[in-house]
Image 1 (cartoon, helix red, strand yellow):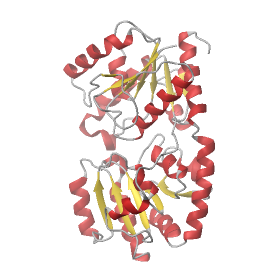
Image 2 (tube, helix red, strand yellow):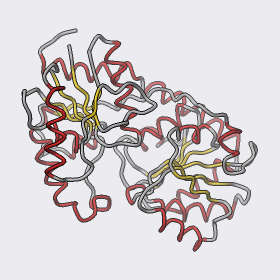
Image 3 (spheres, one colour):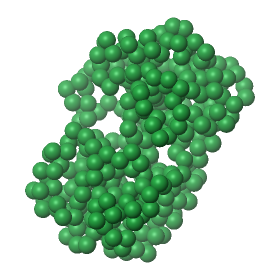
Image 4 (spheres, one colour):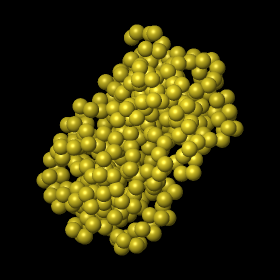
Length: 362
């Protein structure tokens, strides 16, 4: 069986998932070449070809991407688009092929800006015409009611391999002048409204007042940098909070941390949480994606309401001030992640979706 994996512009967990899925499908005997924007899989695996899936809604960019996709569609029995823009490109084309779309994100008013109306209309139109829609959580699947027929929706958690670190704890910390025994929190996130980093900064101002020797490293880049730098100065936390910028192997920062933190307003499956748990790092996060399902009992971390900087700060202080509790939470997180994010099992579930459409049994 031959499929085609179409990936849109991505710098985060989506591309990790797609690279992992492609490897696992190949192990199952399913050809799964990945195409997408140039370099989108750099450092993660082979990219079969370039299809310039646009980041915006330009009609000319859409036409160019569909033209580049055409020769890749021919040999495929199923096209699997990851994300809305990739699905938009794959929706119409010759030769016609069954289309699977994985919903990695949804269009939110707070993150889509002025184009929110157009993007939401596009989202509904694309998903309604897909042959199968893969939702990463039951909550997201429920949100598709009225847009996608229920018999076309499948729930499959994205595959997440156990991260392999490229740098030691000491090497990573040296980049910001932090010693091995300094309490360190890391947050890997785009500097984007969806990640609600102002809440993270305010939580940090509360937490560092109680754990004065602790440091926070925010790893990522984006349009909110200037505003966040101004907020950091306003809160007086320049000395304890580092905005590191983009790092192609950001998972090293998670591995070097004592606590991982996330303050997003929305996530489908934040794969950085899976990575932190797989690495045995306790997690403090807002209630997004599977956070409560994974961490709600408090064994592996702590969950706060979206926008609640006080609750986030309480979680950070809990683990920063009690290394024994942090170690126990990290151990529990590793055990939970081993059960919930097994790449082989999850990729087999995706293969079953393909077989429904192509009529091919493994």
